[in-house]
Length: 273
Image (cartoon, rainbow, N blue to C red; front, side, top):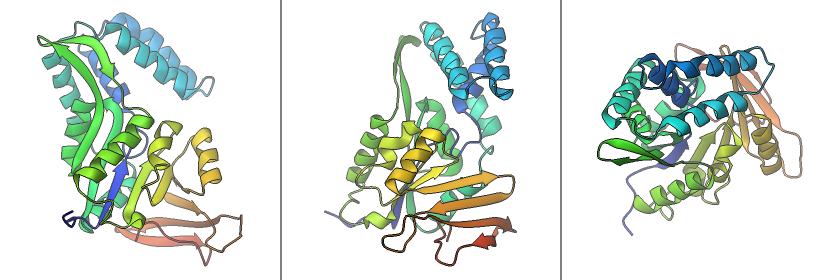
């Protein structure tokens, strides 16, 4: 087995992890705006969004309706028209990212790590997004095309599929035996990332702005938890002292690209180094 040219590997979910929204939702709205999807669906979609924004319903219900809207209308859509809209979405919004995950990505790139994006958003958009950020590889949901039109069949990248791609990437770059496990990381924000975060080959699992389900998994599995709110990053880590159940915390901000510690337990590690 040849020696890997990379110092480490890091796997990023995109929506809600690197990207500060959902590429999928931006895409659905863009297709409504351009007439690819019938505008009659906008009222219901906006209503779900308003209920979520007013904290009267869940984000999952809002997203689920958008998914149902796409699935019921995908068949027969023109591939070129849809991909043109996806390209416009990525071009317009690719810099709409979180500070923590952007810093993490850029620091690992500079350190010679292999960067891989894995997302449930359309693969065409995921690859465009990866190109914008210099990622080495990108995987997303594929949509079957026949004679230039979508058949309605989608192969969604979800949960265990993400772990499959992790295994594939590590095998392709011959890294499992050459890159130490401590330098194989994964970052996600919901339970749909649990298989990727919990894969046996992952040395550091980072739950970024996790929802309640993933938060509980992080506590149970001693994973890293990171929150970004306004200009403050808060990191909660397993206590490095053997036998201790308490987690340790560090809070920091950025000053001209440099980390400025606001509060830190003496033994708390720092992910961004």
